[in-house]
Length: 337
Image (cartoon, rainbow, N blue to C red):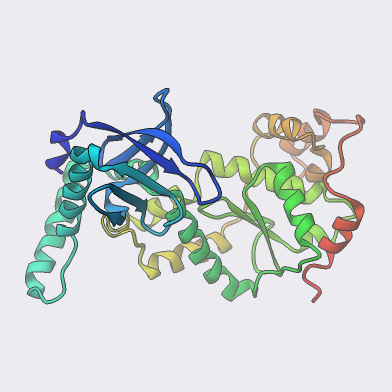
């Protein structure tokens, strides 16, 4: 977007808060590569908003309030004294809107513009670089939305996810101990653990019903978290769907249903490959969880599993309980109702 170069050195101060329960904090606002960068006074980036997804909530002679598309609770407030930044955001938003299709235009014109965009992206921007750019600018709320859409498709095969209020404490304990955003238990049709865009990890009910302790379920969550960090689910989705889907996500914020369907089916069909012990052991050590129970459930007793047992970072040392016995018992019957 040629308009970006005009504002690449423009900065302003504003008030930002991530949700209504948090206090507003003074921030520095600048314009980056197709993003609005919000930093603290020490020039540490707090968040990036895609310019394609910035919405205006209030605009008056005194203040302008903006928020990322889909998350009106996160706001950026700019005083009218920052008129130049407010105008810059508005101009760039309008520039983005002009690139979106408008109903009523002649079909061949829309098709021609689409073909031109695809051609430019194909030849001037390598697919890998385009995916990297998408991972940088797609808002977290949009990534979580994609994860929820994938979960709905997976539930067509697995059945609805299991949940009870009595088991919620156990789910939170598992998530907190393994440092994952959230844990969802599925009644079947899915491999032991599967990470979705947005931070949710799905686990099969067998991991909690067939074992006396939560160590095995926690081990699979840790292993999937590491696998997720090495190859994020959103990257896998975009790489498998192709450059057109990545471009559509960047320009409209949407992913076609067929791409979501295909990715969900592929994830359910693909087997899990055990990561090397040298990668997994430090993660088990940081979480203070024994790697032996996890290793003993692996179907193949190869060098990886032997190392997970031999070099168990916990060994015979006592570990803090992952959750209370009462919470574990409630979690074990989460799919029974």
